[in-house]
Image (cartoon, rainbow, N blue to C red; front, side):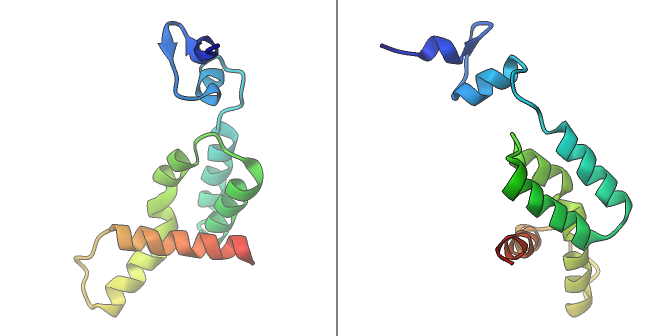
Length: 113
C-alpha cells in the first residue's frame, strides 16, 4: 500500500510528509527564527548572531535551516572577511566558500561548548 497521497497537496506530490504539511500550513514556518536573527543583527554583535543561529539550529528545529543560513551567512562572516583582507593586505577579497566555511566552523564550535 502506498501512502503517496498523504504527500500530495493540490495535485503536487512533495518529497516528504513535512513539505506537504508545510504547504498545508500545518507546521510553523521559520518566520519567528528569521525575526529573532534580524533583531540580533540590529545589535551589530556578530558573535551574538552566530550564537543565536547555533541555538536555533540545535534547539529549535527550524524547517529550513539552509534558507536561514543563506540569508544571514554574509553578516555572520563579515569579521572573517575583514580579518582575511587585513592579513593578506588585499582589499579585493570578497566572500567565498572558504569564508563561509570558517563561519560555519565557529558556529559548530559553539554547539560543542
